Length: 355
Image (cartoon, rainbow, N blue to C red; front, top):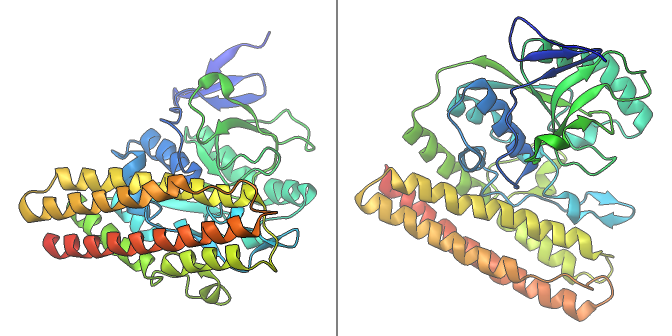
């Protein structure tokens, strides 16, 4: 039986060929996988942040990601819309300043169009471009966040160890799904990371009130599709707000485009995660304010609760074969889009009150 030996940095434990960290907190619950993973890395590094605050500061709570031209197996892949990490890239530098830590990517973490396609390509890319950085981070006592693992559709993965004894045909990675809440479910990864995110240098974080005001302004820009992406070819196909709602409704109404139930359930579920966090984040900001500003922020939270109600009622069962139901759900999406406009009107009023 191999002995377990801790390194001088205390939290690095060596068990035979497996090197792993013994102090990485589990996820606090479900939610957006990338942001749950960021929460784990930042809390481990000592940042005073939590999931809902990161959702708000990053813009994830307020975004509706859509890519009207991204296809998979011949269909517009709406199911991938909430999973693609490009939305996080839009405000990465601000998020780093807000939390007081650099967020450094190794490989194209935010750019899924550059991810290696085949398992062999992922293995080669990981070994040549990423593994050395993972080893350095773990040896220094720091966990690493990886992107989507296709083998079991794990949506973000926290790497807490590596195994230098595994053959190159098996990923030498130990960790867990970023949303995993139980330690017993940590294990070897089933696939090769496409890219990773690591915590870099510590900096002075922004004043919390200033950071919140900036994040709320970003939320308005997202809703008006003014936050990016601006570069070709994404400017005309990747949307973050009202244009995303329009694209979703148009896809549902276009009977020349095949759809499947699961993909649209995935869009709905992503929106529920995001807007639930929006309510929680804005309520938290309101608690630190007084008078007209606090009242205006509470109105914003209530408006997003109104958005959540009809999102929860969306029903995509059988839409792949039921044109009438597709149209019905498209009409419901239009109603939700109008409620989102109302929420943003309240948000702009709150921003004016906060100045």
